[in-house]
Length: 173
Image (cartoon, rainbow, N blue to C red; front, side, top):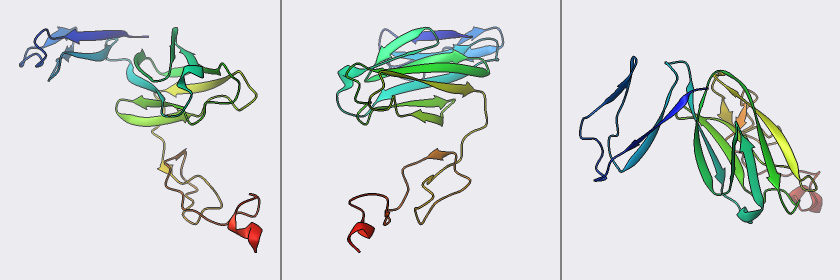
């Protein structure tokens, strides 16, 4: 794995054009008081894991690559290509209540984990760093705008009648 480079600026306006160079890589802080970047000699990916977005966040916890966290949280990891296990837990056992863990690699959303199912305390999710970027789209085969090529649901599925669901419009027909 790589090294996380943490850059600080006491005044809070960035480094004003100054640069930190390690080996053949350069880092700068364009604005603000703090920033992070990933360094392993150009062989790692900067992976951000963001957890949150739902209710009962105090019940949510996770571990990933030797780091533990909860919700809300965003952590940056320097990962070499390969598989990594993310373990998400819910202390009450009723699922993550809308919270998710999103994995963004070099600025591209790569995966989303919805947490353990209700009734499970913890669940593992395997994240592959360095893989192909996912294809966003509607992954619900019953939706009118279903995209068979989509590998990650982007929330764009259009509503439709589903006879399998109790309160679907088909139930009343």
